[in-house]
Image (cartoon, rainbow, N blue to C red; front, side, top):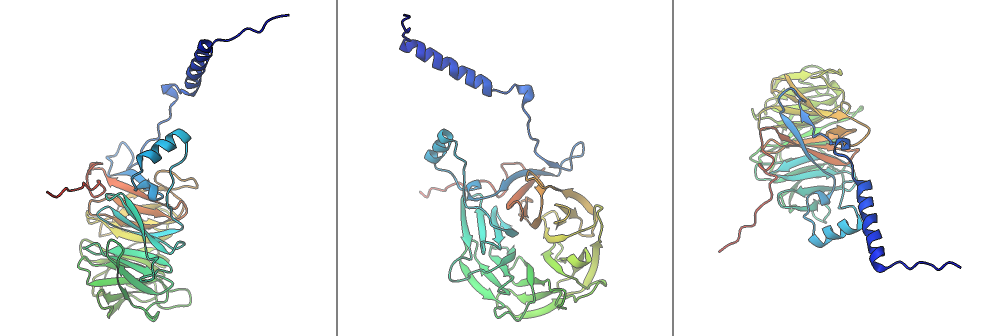
Length: 372
């Protein structure tokens, strides 16, 4: 009869240590096998980069500072960092790194305060309640103007979400409002009425941003120069002109603030500088005009005269950096950063001008000032 050999505690410890080493070795990947995902730049090398993909916002977890204990718990348990996400985002506006995203499913505007490291919602209270927020814009003071497409009105809030006033209530002004632009002084708003197949109300309506008084209309339904068919959005250029996304005519039309037609560019097609399903527009501090195309899965950058400069992003059925299935909204901050919404992937991608340092601009964390 053989006796069972006793294993000492020291031997057990050695075995466990050896197992740990083998486990680490099994998990280790040779340096040559590591696949580093390159950060997208536009245009791609060897051309000089003009824009660099910087980050993506999916939920509050992407901006809210995490508690140290929560971070340690995730490290030990393997839990994934989660937060309040987006339902069906549409439009976007930005003011000094504070990103406002309209959400037609959640019926709110989500606010990603990047420098302030906080997240909150606008439009879910009793006052200034939103039903279907779509187009957004901010004035020079950071006040937020929201088109409610279903309620057919405009709600105005300060940058912290306090409701200031309701404009154009009563539903008599619009058929199907979608986009909006406000001048820096907060004196005029330009609201795009997309209309519909059976409606002739395809135009941009202009109002006093304080009183809501109707001032004039720009455009009428048609395909001739200056006429609109299913317009989607409007932006005010650095030159003071209005750039209107004329969706049904697959072009951008340019007007003076008094409604005088200036020029147009674009056209239907699949080549650069053409459009298939143009959605929203934005103007940057560089003076250029940025147009989102949902079918192309990108945004195109044009000079004010309509010359194509660059295309950014591509269509994809799989989410990723600079990949889009259903892009919609676009906005540009004063530092030149570009913010683009994708409805399908429920995200906001951020691009940084190549000449702007990563630690520069409005997304830098606010430092707490201690008063003496």
